[in-house]
Image (tube, rainbow, N blue to C red):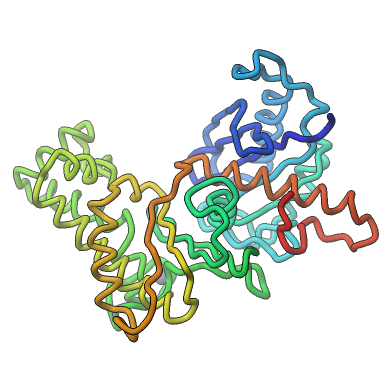
Amino acid sequence: MAGTLAIGIDIGGTKIAAGVVDEQGQVLARRRADTPGTDTAAVLDTIGDVVEQLRGEHDRGAGRRIGAGEIGALGIGAAGFVDASGSAVLFAPHLAWRNEPLRDAVARRTGLPVVVENDANASGWAEWRFGAVQGEPDVVLVTLGTGIGGALVIDGEPYRGRFGVAGEFGHMQVVPDGLPCDCGNRGCWEQYASGRVLTRRGRAAAEAGTPLGRRLLDASGGSVHDIHGSHVTASAQEGDEETTGWIAEVGDWLGVGMASLASALDPGVFVVGGGLSDAGELLLAPARSAFSRSLSGRGHRPEARIVAAGLGPEAGLIGAADIARAATRSQSAAPSSGQSGRPGPFSGS
Ligand SMILES: [Zn+2]
């Protein structure tokens, strides 16, 4: 049957991850490429190349080749603001895209119907369809990487906001006159509750020459600037007390911020994804205590659950593929329903 598979592509600041995804959210074939700088034409070329490679790729699980005709849609998850129609990237901090009409350019290049989605929204959608929060009506996804991203599912439908940019939780102010942020403000949540906190502390320890700093330097290959949050997480997972404390502090800030989000949104569950969620309970246990402690009306209301994401780093590409497949279906099912490239609500399938 034609068109049951979809390609998902997750465009990050350094890597492009792509895969062929089936209707159960399984990734049948994958490709990775370096993001070729910030030049739009070069990024477009790379997307075209990985799509060509994935068409006709061998599906190892099924022991057969994926025919080009089986792939019916292409979804792109990009870090940045995506306009509400799913056609343009309004602003991508790590790419030189400003009002870039990505959807039409990629559609021309590949001959596939294309949907562009914010990468966190794509991940949230994947967790809701196939991952840790399936069937939950009201979900807040918080992704912890270098910064904080987020996505919302409200009443079983993704919520993007009027202009397509809802869920940018990282820049809520949690500390008046706090640490400066790249966004130009001070005291943003992501300065306290993201991987950059661990990176900052790990590098400071290395520069100060503490025993822990020297261990982190060894683990990262000897250069201060190669120390990342993942080295700090690994150290904590090996039982180091100091780095465990850093992660607990980040978890504490995570819980405090989620309590504010609960005041505004009242979700049933928070799902925590992104690279920092590899820290697991080292992060989530302190987050749950801080959440309970900070929740307004605590003790007099049901509390949202806080769970780890289930799909790992491929959530973005899985979600992008599924969104594109749903959009293409709803368009062919209702050809008169306008030109939007999105499923109005994600009715799923
Ligand atoms: Zn900020």
